[in-house]
Length: 351
Image (tube, rainbow, N blue to C red; front, side, top):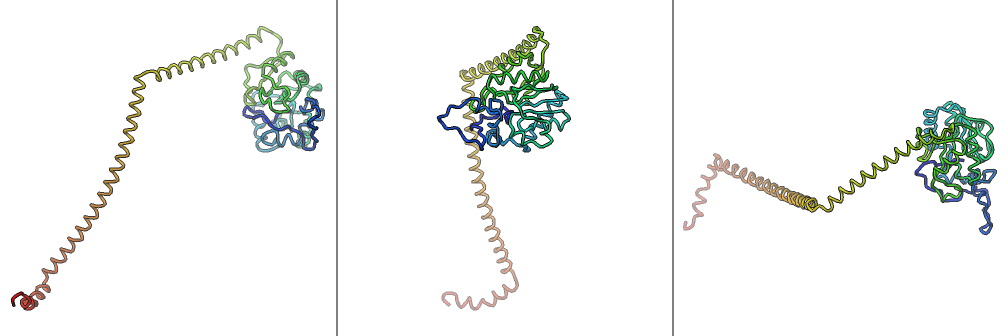
């Protein structure tokens, strides 16, 4: 059964994926490791991969949601575009999402999984193309392509080896992904590096297809193909890829060392240190001048305000002066002034 989150970013599941309907064993009862495996790890009915597992131990609940349908739809698009299978078997198909997406794209897709619960979650049209069984059991027919996504790490080593042999007997192409991490996941009984699975595949006459990049599935996903057994050809392919990767790593390492040397020169060169110090001082001076300019601009704004206020006073006084002159120069004012002459004379001192 595929681990429902076959991506590099998936963290190890923390909880024991026990079906909520099961009764936990007493703490002092010895536990058979196969019983913890669920799936193909010795639990013939796949009960460990039941409702609780799919709801809680897969990160995002593993169900026919938009998230998972889109995810497996993208994988199906790449498989159809790149590998063009006429028929396929998803070994450990869980709730049949990849089978469903491949069927929708015209592939004669089938699936097998040990979990009866998972089989019951499939739409009726998908159930017709899937069956419940262990991967340790022989597969009765052959397919153009077999996919096995995050499954074999859930199986004890002996069962995993038997499953690999059955997958290889069922097709000339096997797209395999098995996480080399997540040791803390309780159902992960056989977490191994990629070369472990390559060795098992080679024992069954399969080698890695170095011309195919399956990283759209997981960073460790690999397409294995049946090989004629021509050892020189296999060695040539391995050595070609090894040499390219070795050269890339050496070039990157040399570039990093070159950059480190340049940084060391900058750190130890007095002139460079002096320039950095001067640059810092200039930045400080620019900031000081900017603050001073802001202050002066504020003072200028205040001065302009006061000038405008004084100008308003001057205009007001000028207006009053003009009005006074107009009054004094008027005929009415001269008559009033003449009429008041006797009174002013009486008020003069000494009169």
